[in-house]
Image (cartoon, rainbow, N blue to C red):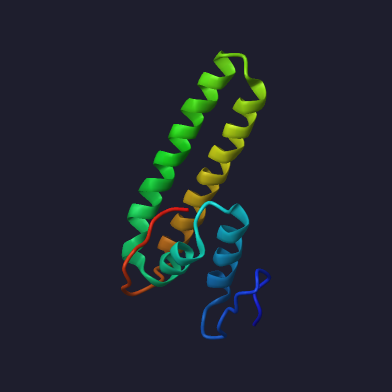
Length: 110
């Protein structure tokens, strides 16, 4: 099965894997290698979820500061970025609940 972003989803991979990959790529918060590890290694999920939570909390704080400083455009942009990171957390938690993966080293966040 060909994946929309040009990556192939092996037939052995569940449709949930392909759906999760598609959603994470659409959100554009994690790089391709990190997405692959999230799908392949359940142990990689906790640090990824933790990092994504840190990202959206920081972005929300920065958005609030921008709004307080009168920069509503910057505040809106930062809130949108925070929203993408919150959605990333949701997808990563869905992957975790499905119990995917075995063992592979983790890489960083894009």
